[in-house]
Image (cartoon, rainbow, N blue to C red; front, top):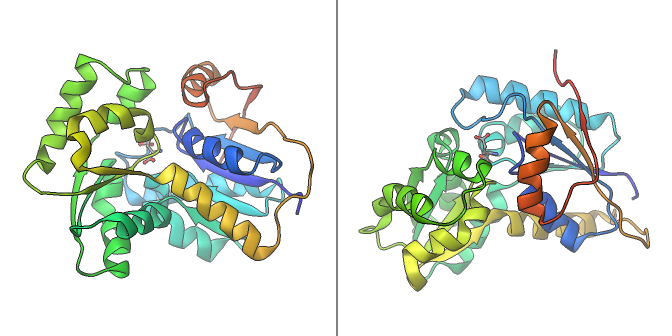
Length: 266
Ligand code: DGL
């Protein structure tokens, strides 16, 4: 029960997922790995992303984790099935929770998905949504410039509004009533994206939905920690800890305690 929960992302974006898990489960020990040496995953091939995802999981397995959260949409889209076949622990990705929420809240059965090129290319969200309800029409758009905007700390203002309009005008004649933020970085752009659509479109943030699923799974398996006090997460990155600390502060709204640089893979 008191074993840690492992979380990995291609970099810093998965902290949006960690933040939500920590809010709901403060007494759990969280171990986060950001593969900052090899980020971004979003423009890489499936084979490469699968290899990185396996290496990241092997790294986290050494801590005897009771659950793995793949806090990266690109890794989830390309590698979740293979990770589940390879490792004998419960594994949660970020796509199923976001897709479920979208299916639950759409009223006109027209849902938009935004994410990295690899996530959209994989059709993982579309397949998940269609498997839940065939009648839903799914419209997908990769938004490759959103990740660098967030990494630069540009979350609001004219540049952000222009980039958002550049990609999201695609949805203007699609009549969607729900949009899934299918990338870990996008929750930071939520208010700017919301401004673009006005009130017509509900925005699903997969970080929040994933934390709900983590809580539910721990309850079902009876493995919620019985600790009384809150614990700080341990952070590991594969390169450039300073940048991780800087963007991490924006995401978590506070300084990260300490970050260790590690080598993952061969
Ligand atoms: N973490 C990735 C995702 O959620 C975004 C960054 C990347 O391209 O690696 O898709």
